Image (tube, rainbow over all chains, first blue to last red; front, side):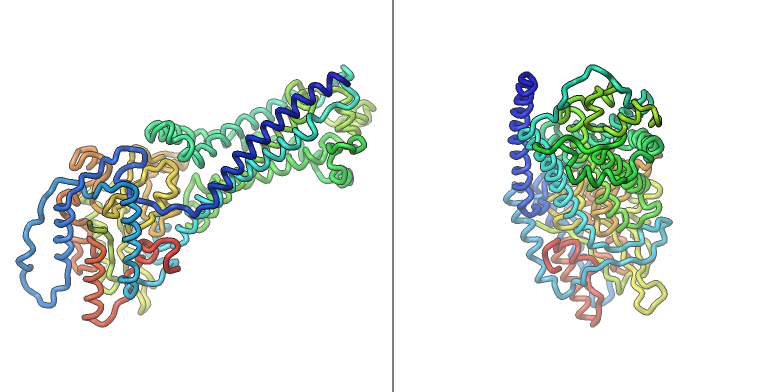
Length: 401
Length: 199
């Protein structure tokens, strides 16, 4: 037992360090999320790119104003006013080339003209009509909710994802620091019991690998512009994002097939039972001071929860993801906006859940990783975590494939 | 400094679609893309109105805020432009845009939409002015020639106004006063007066 506790302390220190780092990340996310989203400022060029659209040209602005004046009310019919000479051809793009403070002042002045125009402005509202173009989604004239969607996407989703992922990881790290690795209490027996067949494992790793790629590319699209783009530059980040979007879509296929196979293989063993109530009451026996582990069949309640989270999450991601891949195929604008928000939200929660799954399958519990990697587990591990399954397997009464 | 805006006077628009056609021709817009379109509200009812709509070049533009690759930007005249070199065709700008302005060529299978295309206020894009590359990607750059968007200049009833926001606002107000009626500037509150103002 002495050697075991020494090894445990190493994990506990690692857990404490990870918890500290995650707490800092979580705090940073929370701090960032408190401010209101900034107004979009004119940049006269692609952000972090050259301000290449700038040349300041007062003459060009004057030419455009002169041209605008040509549209004025003409009370009487007749030839064009004499003032309507040829406009000054400048060959220059328009723009003032202001710095960021100037840009902020500019936007403030734009917003400030609201009161002058107030009388002639219509109420905002969702307006839909009819268009001659053969594209139904073009018939929406105005959807002010686009601005709401922008806020939800840029604040609730972006910061919510950080809070969920860092927050959940922090809980895991704290648990590791507090409790250490969940040991095999009786020690390893040296005797192995077959747990997952080669097919089950292959399917698991195809699904897992696909999920990791999908998750990373999803995070790239959501956070890359803040975290990676400043490092890579606009051009290289564009290539990453483009390749990432394709990886995200292509690997959805093996992921969905993998989950479907899991459903076929494992759904009967993942149904709820009375044992689950007992397991939940005792929190799976993971807490210190709990007397042994509650009995379980092939899948204990924790594993059942992962199973159902993955299955339901995958269904939600599949439905919303297909909707996004085939825009306006069956959804209208509101539906498309909701599909994107649900897709991002469910995806982020799934990532947090899978981080928990990876944790408990590797660092969190001694002897657990063998089950899905080698396919067999130590008899004592099986006895602690899947007592009924082991008894049935060894008793040979029933083969739980 | 001039803040460029569009304004469609719904009492004057006769749904002739000349603006749509002129735009397509001027910029050689690809098949299936409509930088400008005319929407008819309450078709067949006494309250029927047609409104020509394209990118409104919003203040605090939501498309710029949501673009995951920051390919859209605004210039000091309020014109919202974008770089087709950077766009990945994700479609977010369409969900955010209150006016359905961004369009996608749907260049390939699999839901990939190709690079976004939208109204440029006839101001080209982030390429050298009047260059072949600019014309191919974004169309004609009339603004650099001191001209306003063709859709507005071609409008036979002067329903569609384009140019400095204060001036076209003034022109519209004068019209309303003279003729004694007007349904207001469509979309201006959403486009130019932002999230938090005048809810």
